[in-house]
Amino acid sequence: MTKIQSGSGKTGPEKKGKVYGIGLGPGDPELMTLKAARLIREADVIAYPALAGGASFARAIAANFITPNTREIVMDVPMTVARGPAQAAYDQGAIEISKTLNAGQNVVVLCEGDPFFYGSFMYLFARLNATFDVEVVPGVTSVTACAAVASLPLVARNEVMTVLPAPLEDAALTEKLASSDTLVLMKLGRHFPRVRALIEAAGLTENSVYIERATGADEVVKPLKDAPDVAPYFSMILIVKGADPWL
Amino acid sequence: MTKIQSGSGKTGPEKKGKVYGIGLGPGDPELMTLKAARLIREADVIAYPALAGGASFARAIAANFITPNTREIVMDVPMTVARGPAQAAYDQGAIEISKTLNAGQNVVVLCEGDPFFYGSFMYLFARLNATFDVEVVPGVTSVTACAAVASLPLVARNEVMTVLPAPLEDAALTEKLASSDTLVLMKLGRHFPRVRALIEAAGLTENSVYIERATGADEVVKPLKDAPDVAPYFSMILIVKGADPWL
Picture (cartoon, each protein chain N blue to C red):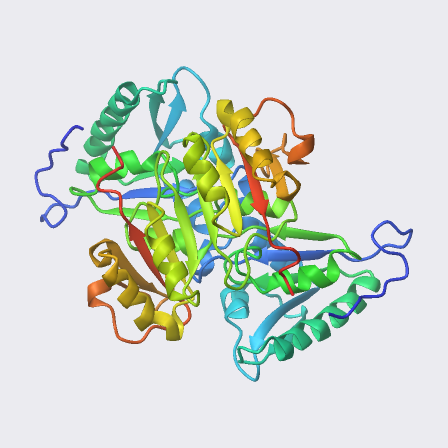
């Protein structure tokens, strides 16, 4: 990780810019918060990750609020499970953002969902927070967006909810599937067939709903038993065990 | 639970109104979504719970978007842990909302946080969903709002997060405190001293942050060791075990 140099630091006498890490919500631009929309409209400089050479989902959500004179810092993140190349992209992004902040301008970083919930903003936060003022604006997560589009209440009263990334190993997933009232399985992608088999083995298929790209134009919502064979990264399974616990 | 009678039902020929259950976010009105703000502005009829004879937190968040000619259905929910009286209030609210829907008007139900995440909207949903069209608009939850104001990234990569209501029994809490990378303890209130002792016994006090009324004007954010002795219902403890897992 690259150390960011700053003449004055957080408490120094010079006027430094501030970083805003803003959650954009799950995909529908209207599920952005009023604060996120205002900060994007007012921004002199925005920054966001893009898949190397490709589109940025974050920028697409925010597009209608970006004004023509806004400068854009794009972090090209390579598509690989190796950590090094992606972290190098955030190193480079943090350096460019730091220059802007040291020149006294604010930088609004666009983040899908919520910045602190499995968000890549955390990599920038780790690099910038010691040196600059950082404000995080929370966003609607894909978890409650999926529940909304599936018409599926998640948790009530004293029920317990656990969020499980699908890449976890079989034993860990199976143990945790048994331990909570509501389960949220994220980051399905290539792990989908394996996770689906574990859910079936746990006898939970009937309690499971599959959702792709919640609130997006190409949204898919199906009972897990009717789900397609291949799941994209932006898909999720919600498992709600409670039998009409909402009364 | 009261069964709602309707002449035509969801698929009938008559034009019935639609129910919107909208999440208002954690407290700062600017953390409402654009969609929630629009639906409130456009509403002919809104509905919300209020503590019997007292104020409605939901209405307070939405206040600046409610127009003068909007009709307001208030559900007076008694302050008691007994289920009966509260459920009677939702029975009554559902009847009044149904009359409005049957007359062809939409009803926008105001919900703190997110409607399907420990939200009382679920009680109305159970009463109305079989008969009327219901759309849920997700909102920012107190979970990510607390993380934002505490500058505390919640989960990254393959980390597991569990949400625990504080009223759970000691054994269940202690077991679950050990089982996830990130823990969210909700609904502290009178359970706070007990939960705090369990966290201390688990050796997790140093990883714990206490937050009251995140994003509200009277917000409190402190390391758990410096927290006050008494916690309100709208308070939370975040426990993040990961040691700099953000790189």
